[in-house]
Length: 191
Image (cartoon, rainbow, N blue to C red; front, side):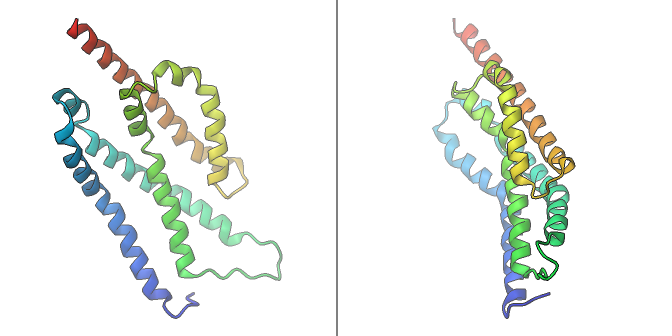
């Protein structure tokens, strides 16, 4: 149902913007890489060689997870949630698109965690040992994030959201380990 004069027009514009953002993300990463690449040393270029591919891959997986898993659960819950039977839910198209866009883009951003871990590990800020030692705190934080992200109060939805976050954390530990091994190998080769 459309309850605004420009609702359908706004729907088309917002949908086009969201699709453009999702499809333009790989190109944006490519342009960022082309801008940063000349300032890097040869070893740094080799280390960051797959940045565009991996960041795009993770973003697309995150978008798909958000759109196909989180969004349907959230929309079903929010559409059926009532405080009182006397209050009827009427949603505008703009509200729907805004909710879908927020959930899917946030998922795409969260799935960039291994890239963030790679950058922080390369800078020496994050180590696999630190991540392993902080795993139990990370589990609590992940569960809190999953509880906040999911509007439904049930444990199943929270679990569905938290499992990929756990997997991303574990992938981050592996990524940090690879970075640490490369650093040690470079140090040994330099001696």
